[in-house]
Amino acid sequence: MLSFEELNKHNERDDFLSLLKEKLSEKRYNKIIQKSNYNKTIVALQTDLVNLQNWIINNNKRLCVIFEGRDAAGKGGAIKRFVEHLNPRNSRVVALAEPTHIEKGQWYFQRYLKQMPNPGEMVFFDRSWYNRAIVEPVMGFCKKNDYELFMNQVNNFEKMLVDDGIILLKLWFSISKQEQRIRFINRLSNPLKTWKFSDVDMEGQKRWDIYTKYKEKMFSKTNLEYAPWKIIDSNDKLDARVDSIKYVLSKFKKFKETENIKLKPKAVKNEKKINYSSKDLKLLNKDKALINLLSRDDATLIKTLRYVKFERRLKKLQLEMIKLQNWVYEKNKKVIVVFEGRDAAGKGGAIRRAIQNLNPRKLRVIALPKPSETEQGQWYFQRYVQHFPKHGEIVFFDRSWYNRAVVEPVNGFCSKEQYSNFMNHVNAFEQMIIDDDIILLKVYFSISKNTQQKRFNEIKASSLKKWKFTEVDGKAQKLWDKYTKYKDEMFEKTNTKIAPWNIISADRKIDARIDAINLILKNISYDKSTQIHSKEIKF
Image (cartoon, rainbow, N blue to C red; front, side):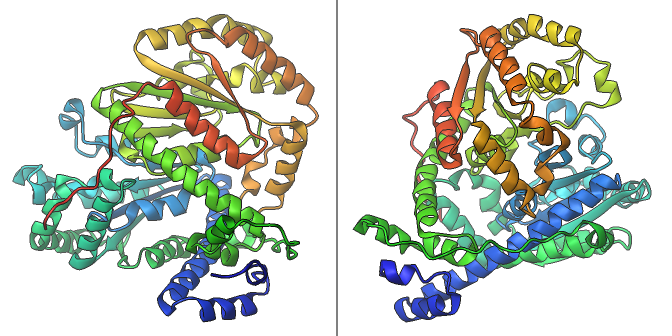
C-alpha cells in the first residue's frame, strides 16, 4: 500500500509511475495505466464532440448515428461516452422498446422516422431499423416475407434520408463468441447489470452461426457507398469507445477550423499533509482512486477521496433505483420526476447519476429546446404532455413547464398575461396528472449566488462545458433578486399537498446528487424488499 507521501507525488507523473510499477503487480499496474490513458484520451475526444455539436447546431446539420452489434457488444457504453458532455437539448439517444400493437400495424420504418434528427440535432440509435435484418429473423420475431421486404426497401430508405441532407453513419460493434460469453457471465454476477441479461441473450450464444449468416447477408446487401458500415472491433470496450468516436469525428473536417478551442490544464500543487485515517489511505490505494489521480490534471488527494466515497454510496443507491424501475415496470406505473433550479445548479449531473445503470428502454430524459413557432401557438402545456410516461416508464424532465413560472418572466420571454394564466392553471393541471395515476415528484436544486458565479467561471473555462454558458446565464447574476422573487412566488402558490416541492441544497454537487436519488427513493413507495440476485445460467 502506498503511503501518504508516496500518493502525494501523483503530480510528478514519472516518479509516481515508477512508484506504482514498484509497488503493484504487473497485471494491476497495466490495468491502471490503460484506464488512466483511456480517461485522458476520451476527454480529449469528448471535447471534439462538443465542438462538432456546436458546428452542427450553427450549420443546421442533422446527424444520425446508428449503433448495431450482437448483445453485450458495448453499444450502450459507447453511446454514453458520445453523449456524456453534449447539450441534451440538441442531442438524443433513441433506444426503442418492443413495438406496440399499433406500431406493429404501421409501415416498419415509421416508428424510426419519428425519431429522426431536427436541424442542429444529433441522434444516436441504440439499435435501429436493422433489428429486422438480424435479430428478428434469427429469433423468429418476423415472417420471412417481412424480412425480405425490409431487405428490398432499406437501401432506398437510407438513400432518401441521405439525399434529404441527413448525415447517416452506421457502426457495427463486433465481438467474439467467447468475449460475449464472458460478458454475459459478468452481467449475471453484477447486480447493477443483471437486468441487461435476457432470454434473447442466451439464445444469441446458441444461435451464433445463424446470426453470423444473417449478419454477413446484411453487410453484403447494405454496405453502400452513401451509407457504408464501419466495423468496430469491440473485444476491448475501451478501445471500441475510442475508435467509434474517432471514426465519427473523422467524417467531419470543417468544424475543427472554427470551433475547436482547447484550454491549458490547471496547475495543482501538492497538498499539505492531512491526518488521513487508515481507512482513508486504503481507499486512496483502490484502483479507482489511483486511476483518478493519474487521469485528472486537477486531481488532489482530498478530491479523490471524496470521489471514491461518493462512488461507493452511489452504487448502493443505484441498486435501489434498479429496484424502483423494476417495480414501475412490473406494476405498470407512470412516473414523472421534474428537476428545476437556477442555471448551473447541477440538475443534469444529478439526472445522469440517477439513471446511470437503469434500462434506457424503460425511461426517458426530456430536455426540451426553445419552443418552435408551431409550439408557441399551442396550449402552453401541450409540448410537455406529449412526453408524458407510458405505463411502466419513468420520465425525468431536465427543466419543465415551470420555465413559465420563473425563467420566462424573469428574462422577458412571456407576457404578464401568459405568466398569470400559467400560475392560475398549473395546480389544476398537476391535479389532473395525479388523478390519472401518474406519480409526480418535483425537485428544486438550490444554490447560492456565489456558488453560481463560481460554476459559471468554471464552465466558461472548460472546453467540455463551455456550451452550457448561454446569454441567459450571462444575465443570471444581475437578475438574481428578480429570480428569487419569482421563485418564492412559485413555491408559495404551487407547493401543494398533492404535488409539493422538494428542495435540495446543491452548493456541493456530490451531496446534491446523493440527496436527489435518496429523495426519489423515499417519495416513491416501491417494493424495497425486492432483492436483485445474480443468476446462474449454463451456456
